[in-house]
Length: 539
Image (cartoon, rainbow, N blue to C red; front, side, top):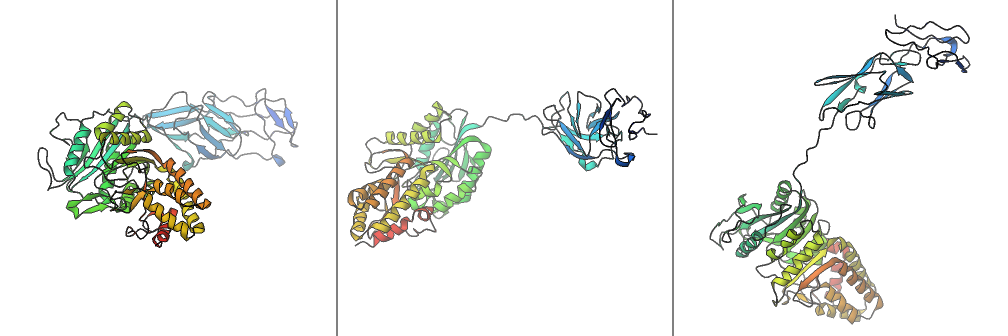
């Protein structure tokens, strides 16, 4: 027969209590009764018991309503296993068990070191760790706890009992590199021999283990033959091999690919990130460049290229997300329109306003920056590329390179939008004529004006000189100030090159086909095409 507490009489003699074998009598010195009126009556041992109205017997045991597993799986004093019941309770003669694959752990409910009861909440903690990666099932004996009237637990619903999953020990993987630099060499064209020269420059620099240099090289079947010749597309790390006569020994074939296909670039970026994970990622697009035309021409693929929209899509769809450095070892790519397209996809952009010599960047001059400081940030690395390029062509004509902080592009776009609005609101015919002449004052890129690109700072500076309207002058000064925040490095041999070009045909000049808001984010953000329409009407 199960022992049970009777509802204490208001003033009667002490009741006879039955206990389980080995269970201490609940009638200890601290026991207290309440009268039927709810007053606390002392003089008996055990726990306080509240009288039930009408003197009926309490036969309903406590019900488990919630069990909360520790966050890390193993119950500890700081992160215990929590059991919540529908009424206050006390320990019984039973136990709690954790059952795992290699045995069971029995925890007596009266084990004060591992079980703590606070009203209707029970906290359970172990005095030893559990095996990392192990799994434990909780079992709760019906006699483990009783309510204050002595009733054992109600049957526990199985779905309330959690399985304790102990977190495995995380073994550290290989240390992530500080940088992975990716060179996309679209050399399936007349620049093929310069690709081999630039690969040789890269292989002359012994980079530290924390810096990865990888390349995708697409070569042509027409221009260059010789040792280590191939005509397909190859991919792999670029490492010194000690033999200046051969390059790209570590590259492996992936078949013939079209470097003008955005999927090829996305595949390269995803491969580099998966194979050579790093804290920072830099991408250099190596090829012909045409500013608004795009980059990465592939002669074997019918002259296909990456348009600006396709370039943006290729990077967006890659697993890298945002590049720390985006470089164009190509002509004419340092344009406001290009920077606006790329502003959310890279932190620093390096590009030339003018045409580039066939040999392009001086890789053996700027890669040592990563030898001296493998953790160099993208801004300083961009500045090193700019200064090394200028130093590689002393006295040469038409040398320009700039590094751009793309995070500052939204401020420049807003300032240019303000300038366009000021021209629209305040420019009389004579001011419009002055602005049109200012466009012709700015340095053209290339210098033969075969493309409708001009230096943005030079144009705004000329507007300040030629236009007398104070609102237009103030808007031009604000745009120049914003431009200075974008251009963090600018070097070369062209005095009129100050870091960023813009599409600016001038009056009755030819404009680029398709230069309209739906094609370029820059136009959506600035309304620059509206300004050009007004200038085009000036005779």
